[in-house]
Structure formats: C-alpha cells, structure tokens
Length: 391
Image 1 (cartoon, one colour):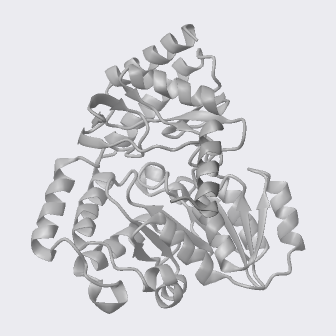
Image 2: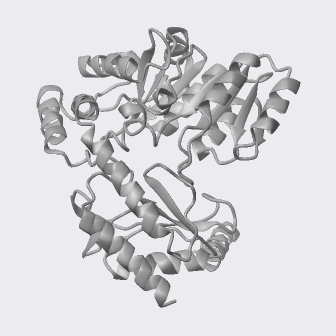
C-alpha cells in the first residue's frame, strides 16, 4: 500500500538519515553496574545518568521486592482516586524535607520529570502570563511553556542582562523564570542566585529543573542547596531516575503551589500513580544519598581526572564541573563515527546531534558514575587517545 501521506513520511525519514540524524535503539539484555550486555556484546557504559551507581544497588532491589510483596506491582489508579499509598505519602514527606527549597516545603510525586514540568508551568500560568526560558533548557520546559498558552520569551544561554531587561519590560499578570539547574547537554550549572534575585525584583516565580543535580550537588540535596538558597518563590523539580537510580520525579515548593498542582495539574490529576514499590525503593535510595557521601566524593575524583586527561584530546571539552562531560565534535557524521569507533572498542558513548544540541555542535556526551572503576576511566581515555591518533 502506498499513499501520498506514507510517501511523505518515508521521504522525511530518509532525509533525516542522510543528514546524520537517524535515531536507533540498542537492546540491553543484562546490566551489572556500568557493564552492559547490548546487542550480544559486552560493553562499558559511559552514556547513562546513574551518577551515584544506585540503580543496581542490592539494597534498592531488596526494597523494591519487599514493596512489591506488600503492595503489588501497580498502583491501580490515579493518586486522587485510589492510587495514593502510604509509601507515596512517606516519600513525599522525606523529599520535601530533604530538598527544602523553602521553609515548610511540601512535595508531590510524578511518574516522570516531563510530566512534572508540564504540570508546574501549565498550572501556574496561562494566557496573559509570561514564561522566560534559557535557550538550552530541556525540551519539556519548552513544551510546557507552549502548552500553557502564555507568552514564551527565550533568552540566549546564560545571557542574564537580556533576561533582566526582558523581565523589566514585561507587564504580564504572572511571570515564570524557568531554567535547567544543570544543563543536560553542556553540564554547566545555572546561576541560580542571580535568577532568584531577578525573581524577587520582578515579582516572578523561579522554576528549577534539577534533573541532573538532585542527589549529586549540595551534598545530595540538589543545586538549590548547592547555592544555599531558600525562597517561597522557588518551585523545585527533581527527577528520581538519574542519581536516585529508580524512576519518577517530584516537585517541592510552598504548600500553596503544591495544592495548586494537586488540584489543577492535568498530568497529575489524569495519570495513574507510579507503582508503590518504586516509592519503597526510592526511600532506600534517599537513605543512601544521605548516608553515603563517599559516592559523591568518588564521582568528583573521576570528573577531575577525566578533565585533566581530556585536555590533551583534539576535541574541546565544555566547561563542566558535573558528571556530564561533553566532547564537542562538530559535524553529525563525525560524532556518529567517533561513537561507533568507541563502540568497536567495547565502549558505549552516545553521539548527541541536533535538535537536541545546536547545529554544528554534535558531540559525545560522556557521563561519569561513582560506579566506574579507575580502570574503566583509563580504558575510555586510552580509547579516545587511540582514535584521535588514527583519524
């Protein structure tokens, strides 16, 4: 069967492949920390977000198994129907106290960070309001702004003067400044103190997407704690499938904000609650984030060693003090080729291309984990040097 509509899709897909933008899934058969069996091959993984090595920790697995035995494997309904379990309630209280973006903060669980950000922005603003976003924000913050029907004002990455000017000129009823805390493809940290100062001076909310900072920065409490900030203007979103090692996300904020989300956020009201067994695993994860600071120290040591060695490579490494260490290659095809050559050497390092990153900045997004051994990092650095020497 051939129709014009199908032909258009086929042509568009072929054009993506020709431009070096085709995306393909790898099938993981088994996992042992950073060692993966993928497509029948044993590989060392440098492309995930399990920054503290918690995803395969036996204590989290045991907590999930116990939670499944007590609660089953599914919540069975939305939180507001009959899907809110005691494990969810306890985890929300712990997360609110741990992240503490303001005095007496409350928290609300979501099944994914994408859903959490859609909830925040669409519940707090609409027509007649304005959303201000850094151009390198994650796609979910951009989608949330568009869905809110508010005016969406994007500013050049890190251009605080431009943001300040636009805020000063804005007469919207309600204003939201939305930012990644750690930018997911560059690894740099947003200037949250200055952004909070702008929010105070211009009577705005500050929405912080801390997907890549929670559990790692601020002694595990996140990027807001890293800067020593606390304000009722902060709406904090942390994800639980990266450094926390499990799945889902949460929003922590003033009780009035949380109550607003609970009452009106469509991605909360109309979504089945996450399995309570995950909340049980996350309580165990939060305990380890709190009680095992050596994981963060280990990660920082790996980051420092990588950055020192990577200075000798022909590809620039973006300035990042986080676990995200991007090697900027430039052309799409070259980034894909470099990733493939590492794959052939037993290393999985994904190539990131537009539209995820700007045109001309295709890169290898190298991510480090406390689970990486010194020998693992040596293997990566040796492979990169070998590939660089034989273009």
